[in-house]
Amino acid sequence: MRRIDAHQHYWSIARGDYGWITPALPVLYRDFVPEHLAPHLAAHHLSGSIVVQAAPTLEETDYLLSLADEDDRILGVVGWLDLHDPEHLRHYERFQAHPKFVGFRMMIQEMADARTILEPRFVEALRGYASEDVPVDLLLRCDQLAPLVQLVEMVPGLRGVIDHIAKPRIADGQLEPWLSQMKQLAQHPGLHVKLSGMVTEADHRAWKVEDFTLYIQSVLELFGPQRVMFGSDWPVCLLAADYDQVVEVLLNAIPQQWGEAERALLFGGNAERFYKLSKGESL
Image (cartoon, one colour):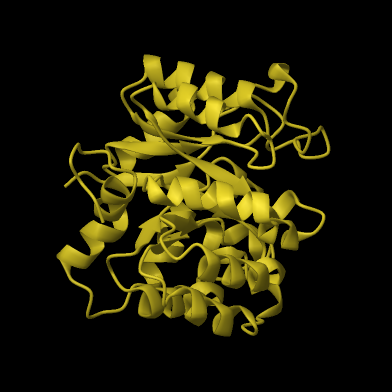
């Protein structure tokens, strides 16, 4: 079973479609490419990673797929689609022709009103992808969980993964209503969760590993060892922690009763299965 980082990013600033990465974020305002991640993958005995889109453009997905052509450590690419675009299926079919395209991400976080995902055209589009068992990443904040709870009731067959444990208010130590809504979502067997992006939801300069324990253990208990994935969220994590610290945060919170089998699923097995990295695999 391969060890996999199920969530990280690459970008080239000169491409010009990363509007959120500005000189005001000097840690991130430079190029990040496979050679920069390679030492971290090696240090943690990771075979490779799932690269996730960071710009809401079709061109960035093409860029990531071109990187995947050149680097075997890119095991899969999660691209971008706009389900409000009447041409979304055409774009999906083009991406799908690439052997390393493994799914797309819905950027609910960037929507002015998250209830947009409940519009009939959007729901119908997502039902189509669910019927084809397409993996879908879900990027959203904890204050946007209520519409997602409604959406998965309308699309019960969704093969989805909630990125960054839905960004709870870790810096404030706030659990509710995040915890109650995650309990509702855990009732849907097709939903998974990425234990990623947590350090940037804490106090960037004063967090402690203990700040994350309750959040991590809640997710592990609710979704179980077969529906959770490790993701570094590198290089975004560098705003608050380095790669080693991100791994340490997760390892510190894993329940003592978890053995090698459960850890192997968390650190790669579940990502391999969810993204269908091995032919013939399904949920």
